[in-house]
Amino acid sequence: EAQVTQNPRYLITVTGKKLTVTCSQNMNHEYMSWYRQDPGLGLRQIYYSMNVEATDKGDVPEGYKVSRKEKRNFPLILESPSPNQTSLYFCASSKGPDEKLFFGSGTQLSVL
Amino acid sequence: QQQVKQSPQSLIVQKGGISIINCAYENTAFDYFPWYQQFPGKGPALLIAIRPDVSEKKEGRFTISFNKSAKQFSLHIMDSQPGDSATYFCAEGSGATNKLIFGTGTLLAVQP
Image (cartoon, rainbow over all chains, first blue to last red; front, side, top):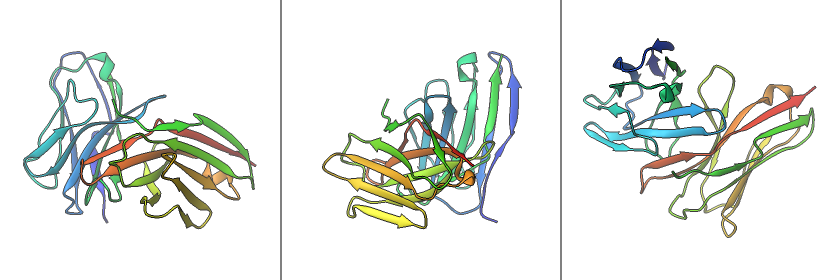
């Protein structure tokens, strides 16, 4: 089954404790992206990647890091989480930014 | 931060009625305009998409109308059903800029 898998589904952490949200896709997609969803603000792009070792900032990259060492994986790293990063995060993949985007099930992150 | 202007923020429609959601964009470099549907607890899923070379696209009860001169596009849901109750996001994308930018979302409630 074609899917985007992200883990964990829920995460509660404390300020400053590094964390990683994993994302993996099995569709051989070149384009992968991370979004955060906040009430009233919709989906905002954090980072995106056009291919292996090719990543670029989206609209809200501050406080986040990503890596794309393999085509299928695109982890999101918060090196020093802060409460304003409490949000619902989605990983997504597609053949390209102007193609159908497949989303994961989301990760609800709470930073205390 | 780039963002597509989407309205209304919320919408209540009676069963069988027409739901209309509007979006406005600024950057003419974008050439891909999708609509995504999101149910509670799920990731967004592509509903329908249009490119600027056509003014309208219809798939079942869902229609996108595109007005290039006004830089606006809208989603029409005909014969709205309670199962259509969800959050809808418009977006604009470009293979040239590698960006896919989402609107702020519209919460649609279809009353039986």
